[in-house]
Image (cartoon, rainbow, N blue to C red; front, side, top):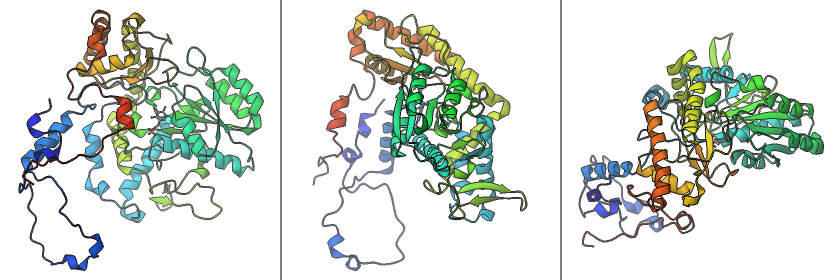
Length: 498
Ligand SMILES: *Cc1c(COP(=O)(O)O)cnc(C)c1O
């Protein structure tokens, strides 16, 4: 696809004196003698010099080397790469939103506060929790905020010995990382063969650590896509010893309209708006990781918080008002990423109250359909009804020598993004597939056809798969070399005579 004429690097296209811009004449004059002499450049910056059309084609061609949800199926388990409707972007970029200032007086931006408030309420409705903050800027940031709420709760009761958090061995890596950043200790609880929490092991841990347990973090459906059936019992065990239940709701997709964490006995949770609520993500953001709490924990949430004043009939911004406030105070940049809030709000309203209830069932149906259609060729370590995602442990036929990495690379040749690979760590050749609700049956059927074709190639022509990809602009990179000795600068090749 890459057009060689327009080059891999803009510097290769540079020709001395070429220009793609014109600036208006300055209506002021300045002299470099006004500037500190030691800060002045000795030589001109080696900037590329190109005409406008060349620049446009260069970057357009580069963009074709990328793969996104708008290019093709992107079944990345645990990351929920769902369709990002363009209307969300359009709403978020309206100048009445994009031009706001975070310190603007509340009476000059009631419309924006109204939306912020409505999303807080919508998330409460969807999750069965009492109050939400939209301030955290990512899932991991939400986890940290939620754990800080939990710590503040224990401290408010002078229960200062609670320093341990129980986390299942299948958890997303951010769970133990956030607990550690929060100054808490991690106690790992084992999973059973079916991927769910081993309640007997949990009982033993509670016996041992009882009064030092601050919380238990759980993901449901868990990281292998299984619904944790023992939650009422687990919640009772944790509550009885004085701990709180934390729900990692980064991937809330299969739960939408089906079940609510608040009804299951969870006290605190976070949601990734940039997964479940359709904001595009990857490459580090921007994200939004709202945190919800049950009744009785609202006072610990961070500020600023958007509330509605019944008396004045207006939306107000609450900052931690006094030194005896229980609020965590600010945990980041004012209100977090308002653009993501707008996209999630637009997504929820586009679907509406009835359609949003179809997200859970449809994403679950799609995942089970793929799993059942491929399990004769791919190893299914946990055989059962999954939720929105499931895990294969490589090919069933281990004699081919073809690995999960090889299959992931070969998928690119067929125009499909790879699933999440080598995660979770419970299996050696993990391949975690999440189709989401927005894919058509034709797309899913074609993906199944391709996965079957690759299994066939692995058997009859394994070299073809092991040396993939063959059709992409860049072949198989050496991950280790790329990570340990990255080449991050370009040495300019003179092609313009100097
Ligand atoms: C993605 C994810 C997170 C972390 O979210 P970030 O926004 O990447 O920080 C946490 N838990 C689970 C289960 C996830 O899938």
